[in-house]
Image (cartoon, rainbow, N blue to C red; front, side, top):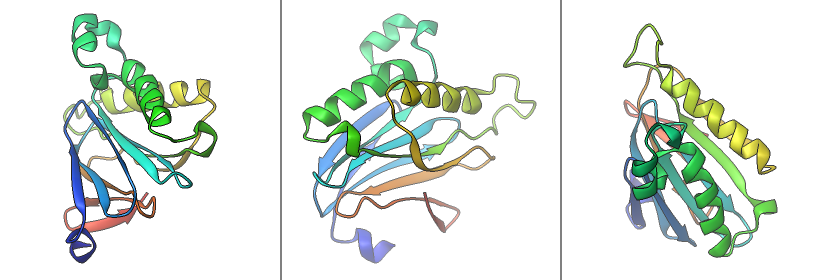
Length: 166
């Protein structure tokens, strides 16, 4: 993997952030996906893609914060992400959706179930948009670093030195 990433431009997505890129030589990466969800959208014909790293399912818990940073929440970030990627040249009918994250390890009794709630909110939004996940690695108790290669559309994550395809 390190050989593959040596000659590419890396676009780093922070927590509650989103990035778009296009074409070979570009890789988008996000770190520390715990209960957060990392979602990639990729159009193989246009070779445009992006990654969203959202933290919480529902912007109604803090509308002013959602207004300042819609990427923080599934219900405000995902529709905006879809809009921006289409404006960048992707066609919704060609989008490949892959996701990772949604872990549960902060709250061992799963009282808040943030990871599960994030995943459920995302699936409902995608369903309303007519999109299905083509690959996912969610849940568990691990933190993930997620990658999207814009030249190939390949999505993978790493954890503790292991590399896993999504």
